[in-house]
Image (cartoon, rainbow, N blue to C red; front, side, top):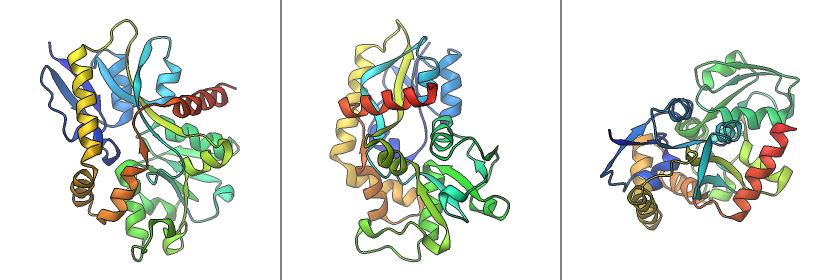
Amino acid sequence: MSYRVGLPPYANVAPLARYLRPQGFELVRAVPTELNRGLLEGELELSLVSSVFYLEHKDRLEPLPDFAVAVLGRVYSVNLFSRVPFEQARRIALTTESATSVRLLRLLLGEDRVYERVEGGLELLDRYDGVLLIGDRAVRAYAELLPSLPESVHDLPERPSGVHVTDLAEAWYRRTRLPFVFAVWAHPKGAPPPPEVLAELRRARREGLARLGEVARAEAERLGVAWPLLLHYLWNFRYHFEAPDREGLAAFARLVSG
């Protein structure tokens, strides 16, 4: 049986995946909720999984020590799009793709709201105060709202085309001054990946980060968004699970369990 490794099909993992040469293992692409289930049910031996899923099952799972998908400040792809300011949103449509982003939103906004899981995009703003979008869908939605790309990415508007856009990772940073870890590589306890699989993951990450411009061009073309926007999006990510990232994950764990 082939060793199966799970990865979500999002632009933010392209630096990890684009140059992977899966020899001796099979690469499985699926949304985070499906990868979470697959790892727990034995359909995968190793997967990038959402942080909240790992925390809920850390008695059964173990993370790789030097891999994560984290960000310090804006992430650009975990956004609440709303018709009203963030704090005033009462009825919110939630993505069905990610448990971590939903938990982060509820932590930041509070439980005294109406949260409903529903498929859709910005058209849901006709029925809800806000809609939480993640990943490629959030990047596309934001790009579509931009009337033009500013000269500097630091001038990207928070209310393009009149829609309030709240970046949840930035809201987390303002609250904690820590990175937010969206995902970790995890495997069942006592069953670490073979050394050759781990070595290939590290090699592919090195090549992906060294050739980030190429990765960004390919992903920008796939998503139909401007290359400078996609490049800025990707170079914000932290893929190595350094000490500040571990502190951020620990802080999130304390808050969601409190």
